[in-house]
Amino acid sequence: MSSVAHTDSVHSAHVLDEVRIRELFPILAATVGDKPLVYLDNAATTQKPQPVLDTLSRYYAAQNANIHRGVYQLSQNATQAYEDARAKVATFLHAADPAEIIFTRNATEGINLVAQTFGRSTVGEGDEVVISTMEHHSNIVPWQLLCNEKGARLRVVPITDAGELMLDEYESLLGPRTKLVSIVHMSNSLGTVNPVQRVVEPAHGHNIPVLIDGSQAAYHMAVDVQAIGCDFYVVTGHKLYGPTGIGALYGRRHLLDAMPPYQGGGDMISSVTFERTTYNEVPHKFEAGTPHIAGAIGLGAAVDFISGVGFGAIAAHERRLLDHATAALSAVPGLRLIGTARQKASILSFVLDGVHAHDIGTIVDTEGVAIRTGHHCTQPVMDRFGVPATARASLAMYNTTEEIDRLVAALTKVREIFG
Ligand SMILES: *Cc1c(COP(=O)(O)O)cnc(C)c1O
Image 1: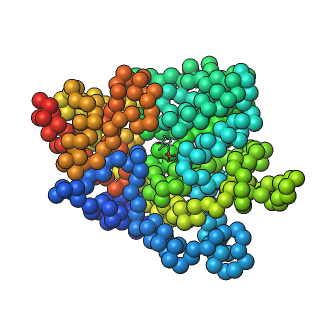
Image 2: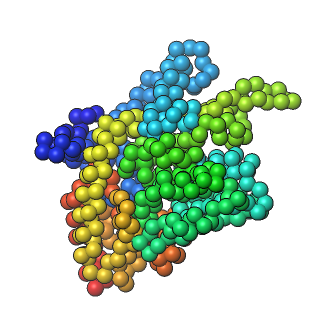
Image 3: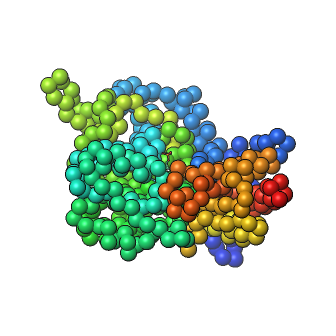
């Protein structure tokens, strides 16, 4: 895949070949009415490149068999492909051991798994779990459920007007009652990229494990779970240019070994009698039932694809788009950006004076431009900024400055209508 990036002879930095990248995503050739599609809802889900589509259809056409049990060749090959995909995800996140990667349905399930196993066996009455104001509902509700069940307390790190974590306040929340910290790496409604190492270090100073929600970060920047030092990290396949219905949870081996199982069923056991069941080893202990085999293999193809393009090229391209979009949107009369952190990536949330976000979304759609409007599963962020909803344009590796200009032109039309 290195053919899609070429070396810039002047700066010897990798530059992304926009045209060739776009050709790999068949859906980008679609039209909406008579307008070419401009897809700017990548924070909700990204489109799928041909190598991922080919891997999925090849799997079902030529490789399909259930895994981990068959002695016949087809099943052994499927098992190998599934376990190879685990190793690819481990490499992608720089985990020390593929056994530290558990396949889940999505990031939401990864967080619920930690809440229901580590959380339920560790958090007791009067204990505390620390999250932040900018969390996705997926990183709020599982902890609320846990705290309600256990009589524990959810503590929330505040954020600044720019949408940055208040780190002093964060540190002052940590104490002997804190059993877990769970913080987003990159906010899906603000674009803020949090200094996750500076979240982990003080927590570890108190021996508190840290979960990082990497749903957004993992397709915009290289993630190294060992360098971050976190104890758990979750990703979701459909935002990584991979299939829906597959995600991954990274966990430190010694924590996973000590955690009780999540769901009971086939594959997660080593022996079963009516008197007593013993559990399989990590990671299988946490993968009850037939998993999303094709999804896992498709996710493996997706992370191969991303690595082939390279985060150097992806981040530089998306930085250029973000700078262009920030300047262009800021020049639209009556437009206010929500989320202006110094460290941010690929997301532009905004409100327009006198126009409800929903109307913005509907009108720009008539111009073929797909953006998201609403609370983006982060209602506390909307409350923090005193808005009911925002419009959000979110960028991926295949977007172009021309597409951003089409959004801006469509917003001009919105302003004309609402004059
Ligand atoms: C998308 C997202 C999630 C949830 O992902 P699912 O695939 O729906 O589980 C969680 N956190 C953040 C920051 C997200 O962007």
